[in-house]
Length: 554
Image (cartoon, rainbow, N blue to C red; front, side, top):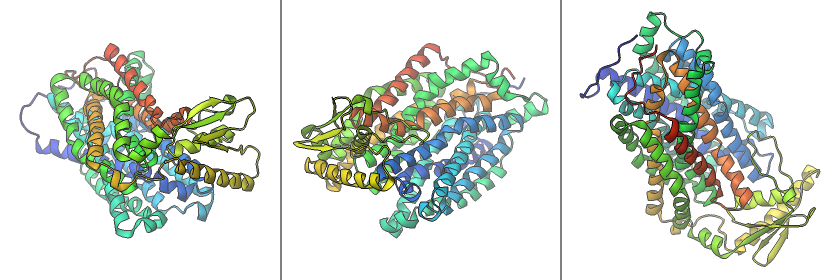
């Protein structure tokens, strides 16, 4: 059995700094690659899903983004197994090569107009490759750093890894903003959006060079020299109940709640500003980027604090506080970012009258289901336009209508219609609906002069602070829950199911909830319920880990 590292009160050694820098910088670049797509979803929808109407195209773009998250647990299984069998270092190299290559190819991929349906198929395939690579990245980085850290500083050291996702998002936003500013919005929408993807090849080269200079984890190297590596890490991790139950608890009692708080505080906040509150892309990106700059140091603060008071209380407190305050925070975002929309929501009620049997819950993670009923069509359009509405039951078989003020507009069903006729009906209905909601005071976009940027920034920083509470200590805690021989595999799966599925599907799920209820804030129930469930389960069943010997049980 390996000897646990001794506690130290001194600063980092040169080797420790190199380990953290190499692991963190490479992971920053990986997250940069991955987030480009999410930040450019609206443009990618027009480039690769041009065969659908704008609202449907945007939903498909979000689903293609989600596809990268859906496959992350499978990447965790594949690369976690490799990391536990052949080592952390070489698995690192494979994941970053796949990620970087896929991202560069997105920048070169011809759009729908040039290649037709082949273009979105290849795009989704590249997204899947990115998701697989990212599924193997995080567990390796966290494990590698933790296995180098003194036991009383694992929270502080691994917290540097936790900053990488936020820094990667920040870097992607800055490159996008710089390119937009340099060439103009029109050219950016036509071809400039490719530049951030192509630039990633330089980041890839730097990352590979750095990772080639890294040494293998001392814990893994010693274990391998002693012949104690696992020959079947998947079987040991998930085929033995003593380990499997810890994996399940790590998922439902830690990472599920951490994931929804993380994605609500960063990605859903950006989505809400741009798509719901209609804030222009440049302003929304700048505000999010500023909140990340202010909030990122708190990953280290909470990671270090977890070395003193424990990981569990900080993570679970973050879940609880976030769940309790999301509704007032997002209501305040509307008040300060788009007061005209807030006034319209209050003063211009909209009513959808439809046969309940005609209305579906518009959750479509595979992107294969078409929502063609008159009820589904009108609700999707109102949700996309950020219009709240009340639901009124209509007689069976009735075509759905929407009442805006004194005006009543009849929807249509596209089921069985020829493509040209459906497109014509959609155009006419969309025009009539847009004119009615505009006349009722619903703004097409937020007035830049009316945005209270300081207050919006304060609210976004609060959301990021929640992220740092749940995310800062999570890497150390997951590492400490499993033995060295199966650590990479065991910790990667619950992390990526939590973040890939519970977190990655948040925008799509939230949009479906908003369309279902007719309330722009209703999508928040998804992260609130998940975060509260994690708080309860974690409080009852998860044990504190900060004093665990991560070399024991090998």
